[in-house]
Length: 359
Image 1 (tube, rainbow, N blue to C red):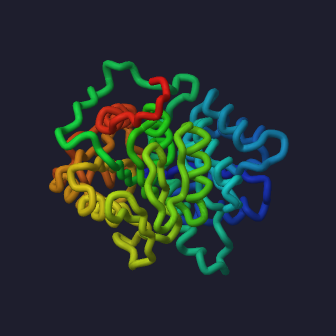
Image 2: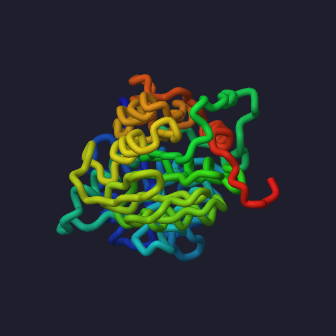
Image 3: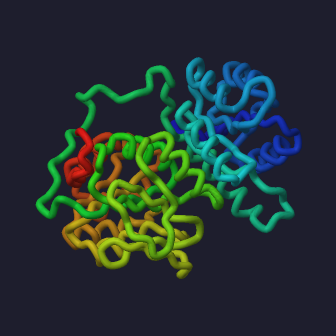
């Protein structure tokens, strides 16, 4: 039975600031599906409370006395694995990058700390917190020590790429649950990867730069925020910046614009994929990863119709199967794969650049 169907999703709130705790507890308890079963003011208390209360979800602050949020997350994932959402008060890129590092310790998502009721963003902020906590409650929990790749037998065999290869561009769309999947894929790409990668990842406002920083550090693949008019380089991943549609023009230029949102989103995956279908046709690969809603699904189909190789993340590995699921329903995906298999297909679809680096 999924949490919230007949019983509450239980939440442990961890934060060293009493006012932040009160705000979060109020928000969560205000939703009929959620119930805060405990609070903790430092990491050590958090570990004890997690073991005692066995909540469905933990919201975890980072900067705390005694034991910080990273150490607490790591300890909880080793001893009593629980779904953990990091909540950060900062939108400074370094701090945001640090909060994404908690994903390496086993956290599932990173959220902006909610603002108070008087704030203009309060309603949107509150909706994002509630939605994320409810979605996370449905995710399977993996004990940290046993993490790592499933045995080869369970992995779908990565198909051989189609004839229009080698591809000259990879376009990726992702939403909820996307950052750790992007990390997995980028870290498995071959040295001298011979094409640029353009990524639209829906994320809290102010988080895209920190996400790019963390992905670059954690995956070892060069990642940066896209900037208007820049020429795409092979072997670099470009992340769409906040509030701007990101598309490609001609063969190899980025165009940013503040045209109206699509599917309520800006940047939208739909906008990127449509431009790739137009400009690159069969010389591209489109990848749609975990996420809520349907952004990018119809446009992945446009890419497929233009001859591109199209991939969607499989249900078993996706935190939320919305976007890739919609793509599969529409017949937009040539292959439905887990993240390591997606990386394997990309390595074969894109020629290794002649950089003189040893393979």
